[in-house]
Amino acid sequence: MTRPAAFLDRDGTIVVDPGYLRDPATVALIPGAAEALIKLRQAGFVVVVVTNQSGIARGILDWDDYHAVAAEIDRRLAKEGAGIDATFVCPHHPAVTGPCECRKPGLAHYTAAAARFDLDLTRSVWVGDRLTDLEPARPFGGRGILVETGDGRQHRDAAQEAGFPVVADLGAAVALALEP
Ligand SMILES: [Mg+2]
Ligand SMILES: [Zn+2]
Image (tube, rainbow, N blue to C red; front, side, top):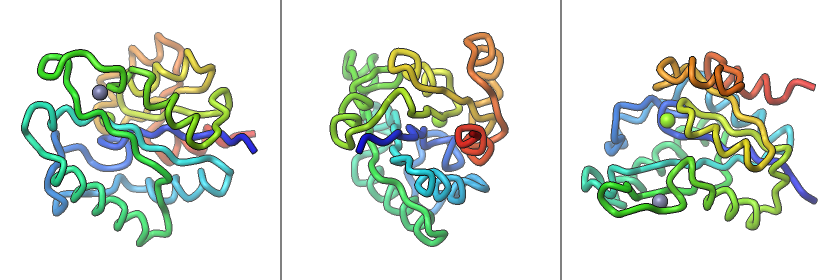
């Protein structure tokens, strides 16, 4: 059966973004994030994290750092009964590694997720703290919601001009997405 996905940004949306998060000891969940993920799964959404990690291209962090942070995020979420179904990472940066199709707002990761999970993208939702997290909603006919955590306040005006709703945080975004 075809299911919708929630495509969630990681840094500034699920966890506090210190900039190039590489130390698992500094991982901090944004309040309400775990509960929001639980609600998404209960409502039948596949929870997919899509994250740009240009720090890897830039040599600021390596894959071991990335995986250590990801494991810590998983551990924190699991403690609250929440989980992520899949994570798609872009490790590139155009200035360092050249153009790629997986760096948001590129569409490659969403197309791959749709094939892997048999997703209905028109019923899917894109949530993040930057406009580039939401823009892919448009070509796929889905819904984008900006959160004001992380860099969200800097992107608020542009998101509103582009017609995307702006809410306080991931908890509020999920509440809006699940409204009948
Ligand atoms: Mg972000
Ligand atoms: Zn990429």
